[in-house]
Image (tube, rainbow over all chains, first blue to last red; front, side, top):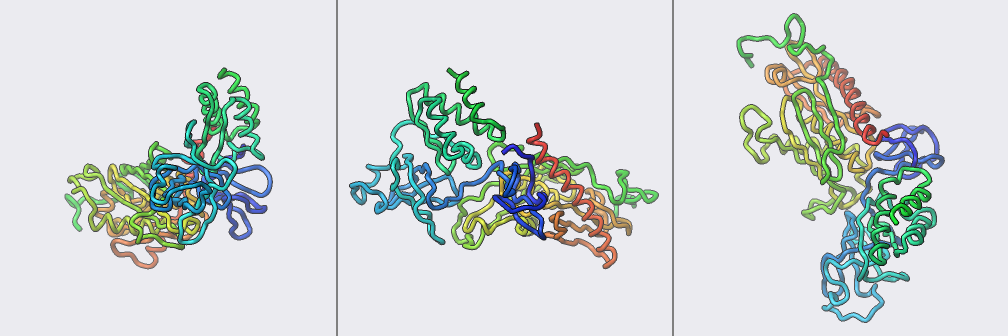
Length: 215
Length: 238
């Protein structure tokens, strides 16, 4: 994400269309206000976007309501999600689900199923899915998530090894951080540093320098 | 309509503010002026001053407005009570509703609404000061605010008006020209494709005059388009 800034409708020349790019009369145009990536396919990383869930995404949800056999969940998206009791592999009592997750509680989950005309379904069927009882949750711009995760998760590993905190970056733009006080503070600062400098090159190196200076 | 004191809108063939026939008033555009909205813009065109804010796509309420095929754009056009000479009575009226409706329709072709079924995109356009051309200046602001919100679009929408004063076709009428002129035609378009997304007419024009109006507004929209692009790009210039 080092490229030039483009606006919707801007002509981007020829090539194969990638993310946020559309084709018209043989030429490519940007769909969004964002940064042009280098190389093929021609893609634009938006300055801002809303999280649109897709199956298999890992997210941090926040409970908005508890029903008899399900939870209503805010996943920071135009589409509110549902966690049904059948997708939670624990001993739970119907009608008393708030003993496990109450309104306001954050938890880690997987987007399990998306169907037309229905709210996206979450499940707790992943290694570390479940309530986030400790640590803190940061809200970040969803468009910056790929940068926060890094290639094959290398940025997340960098956060962990540099700060000593446990870090999980949800695809929906919520980051969970847990560790001792100093570690949490360093990790939060490092995450914010990456969000703000996402358009710069050699970011991993820059984060290392940044965290070193925090100590 | 009679003019006060029998004044003329063209003196020796010149407009009262000294502009050429095909000249816009001074236009200033700033993107991202509000922290709370997903996207925003401030636009001045002569004495017209407008703030636009955009939220979304988000959950749309009430539910019955949802469209399972695409996002619904809701456009609220509002004039501040102090935006005009005589205090404007607050609250939506027939005119504001009409402008909100045609403006939503003018943005719709530009937005990839089909990517967000059932969702809503909320656009709020606040006229702080009115000096003619508020619906088109509102659209110019709304489209920059939409881009700033990260909403996927085919193109920006640029808008301006042209009309007839003293039997002459001129671009971008000011308040006096609008009040005492013979016709006013607001036009919005997607400049990179040339598609017109809003075309209204108040007054009478011949076919030839309308063609002249469209020629002028196309040039005006292209100029505004450049300013919109600069406003967006300027925010990230380092």
